[in-house]
Image 1 (cartoon, one colour):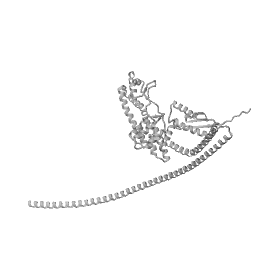
Image 2 (cartoon, helix red, strand yellow):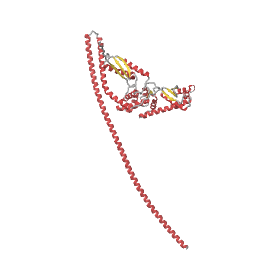
Image 3 (cartoon, helix red, strand yellow):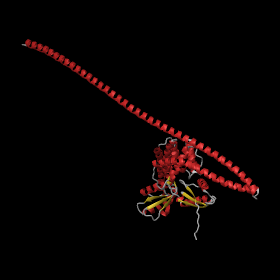
Image 4 (cartoon, helix red, strand yellow):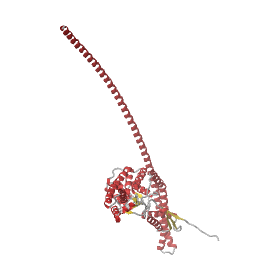
Length: 508
């Protein structure tokens, strides 16, 4: 029994071993098949991903090519448009040159005609001189004086006639063009105007706050006024205090300081000094921000930090009630628009327009006209000679050397003379009216002169027996030139000379 059992055990072990080996072989074979399937699936997925990548690459390259073609087409159209504009401007310049040549020929002809007339007058003078010596009892010296007086009158008449003819021809062409350019510039830029004053209004939470602001024996208000340089008016105005001062920056520091003190409630000299120092930092930061903002708005590059700070100070400066920073921004835009219409350097005109009043930021600290002060500041800060000249020439302190400088002059006058842009002191206004009438009355043959339309027009009545139509034209021109030279005024003044002849009889 024991041997049988051992034999069965050995046989069982052998059979188990064979079965185990068979099962293992089967699993290995199954694993190999599974791995082959996995590999084949991976290859198929890789091929699929590869094909998708290729398709995506082709699609991306097609899209890039299509975008490039669209961009090239747009650039080509833009170049064609610029080319057309250049051709139009070239044709316009050719027409202007031809017009100038025509006018030059006409002027040469008139000059020759004038020389001929002068020669005829000389011959006539000699003839009359000889005749007067023969038939008159006057001496040679008396006859000479008489002829000179007659000749002067004739030449004055001829000069007035020629001036009128030349001006009529020039005005017919120049007025139309200049009106179109100026009206287009004004139409494309429109800005509101607010009148600045020399006072600031600070509301109070209650009437008791006035006593705290004044302090014991007035020590708080004295400290405040001494540190800020303004006057603090505490009157019967309900729940309000008025800050008065001609320096807008100091007034703004005082306003911010007073508002902070009212909120804080601790109003005493040491606290006042501390708050004022903090307010100065706030205002200085505002000045810098305003300068940076105006440079950003006008998109002007490479302006030094010093000029940016001075531009920011213009926010707190006024001229006849008009904010100088807003005025400078407006002049910049108007100069750019007119420069574009004339085909000159728009960036130069815009830059000079923005900086033209930079001298007003420090003109209360430095002696001299603000235009000259501004040009010196621009020179020290590396601005070009063209910009420096435009700044210095915008009030005719120096002669403008470029078209852009003339455009800045014009834009400055347009901005300053717009209705509501500026206000004037009553005394200055009355003095200007008196000066206008005084200049007009200083001319020979003028009977009366009246300044009307708020000083923007002057009407002159002349003696019709002494002044003819052509001399009247010459007088109006001479008066306008003298007004330009001797009076400072915003905008323009219209000069009208009236010559009237009346004949009166009575039937009895």
